[in-house]
Amino acid sequence: MVLTGNQLLKTGGILSFAVALLHIVIILAGAPAYRYFGAGEEMATAAESGSAFPALLTLLLVAIFAIFGLYALSGAGVIRRLPFLNIALILIGTIYTVRGVAVFQQLFQMSMSSAEVAPREIVFSMIALVIGLAYLVGTIVSWRRLPARSNAAQT
View 1 (spheres, helix red, strand yellow):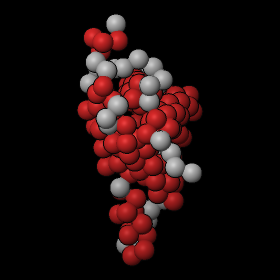
View 2 (cartoon, helix red, strand yellow; view 1 turned 90 degrees about the horizontal axis):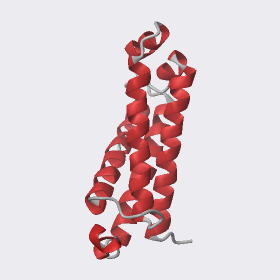
View 3 (cartoon, rainbow, N blue to C red; view 1 turned 60 degrees about the vertical axis):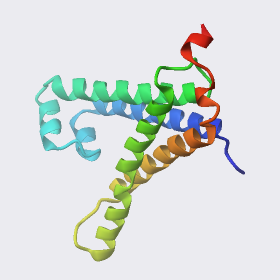
């Protein structure tokens, strides 16, 4: 089965919304979730002490991932065309992909036994890589269609 550019962008968007939802769950779960998902001991300790900072920072990430999802749906034609669509999709895909390629270093570290790498870190990196590639490949496959409509033409 070959996925179209629209299907890849829809998949990337859905996964971005899932990542946003996960960050909401992290806020609700508190310090243990901040630790598990690698936010660092300072964030976990701040959450334990009742500081609003971890929740506010995580809410910012929720908004960013939701915006990423909206851009993917816009590129897939599900919602109206958003500003700077082409460049945004490439940037979003690049952000996810750069995060995701860490999987190769993590696998290398595991194979050399030079450092402990939690299996969940490899999973997180692989997920980011899959999302990034969905954005990038979906955008490239849809490139000719994406700039065809300007924002002014839609109104």
